[in-house]
Image 1 (cartoon, rainbow, N blue to C red):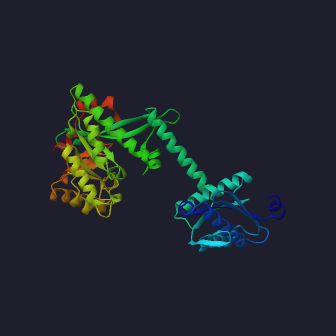
Image 2 (image 1 turned 180 degrees about the vertical axis):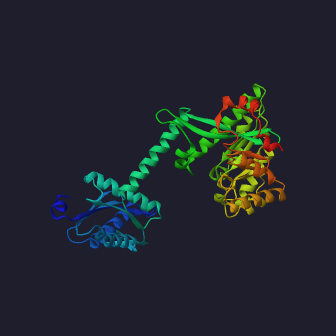
Image 3 (image 1 turned 90 degrees about the horizontal axis):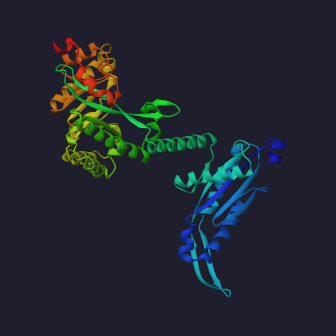
Length: 421
């Protein structure tokens, strides 16, 4: 490293781990494994340049130090030669008293991670650690390849890992809360339900919206725990409102990742069983990210099983996916939600207006209810009513609010008079 500084050059630290070596030891014994290591180490030495260093640091792991690199990318041909040296066929003879008892033709490969100095900005120990991390990524990517350490990517991974840990801790400390946004029939004035929307009451940052934390845990197991917490909390809230004489259905959002879990219907049944006083028909599940549904037949069967438990389904963000018509035809959801992105500009954009008209017509053709989200003004409501869409939610009706405020809001809310004409 000091020499690199003096001559303004680079060096690379390559961490080499053999793929499949344990199987050789298990099948043929350690003596054959040792002979394989000796042969491969000799081949790796031949792959290096004069002045490079190779060390076996334990088991089937080696470290190569590639010094005097005029440019960082000068290490790449050496890494390629190391891969080739490790993946070539090896003949190993098991000898006793100069007599060959057995002869084996063996082939393994290598996963190599490499860090660079001074680019990766670390001391000797850190450079070896960086190379080991990169080697793990090479192995995860399919083995028999090399991977260069990326300090920016590594920092991003660390931050992401820390964020997931913070969210897991927040769930354990009961820092998440549900807010509720009413859904109404604009013509009759009836409140038909509320949508549960998660918030994080962060002790340092205050009340955080889902955009601040849900993308971090997308397709991670913690998202399943949080999703089940939302369902359980919604069922608890239904019971609490029932106790004061208020019967309000609650809809919760279900990510595609959660819905596609093999045990989703089983877990839902267990959550419902834990709340025997709650009628399952007061729980609606809104399917998010429909474009991320991989196996439409499996999802349809899962939804049907859940419907038999008594819950209802809605297709959220309808119209935004390229295969929405397929989902409408094949998924047993009785409610279609018109995405707010279309509703927002419907009064000034004739294309958005045409899409909404099409969705409403489709919903009626398939005998499904349709609800518009994102209703922000009285004019939005009037236009939707003229097109035959009576159900809606949005800031023009009510913003999301804590559970304690819902009963009073339900008692006092009146639709705009122009909606009742």
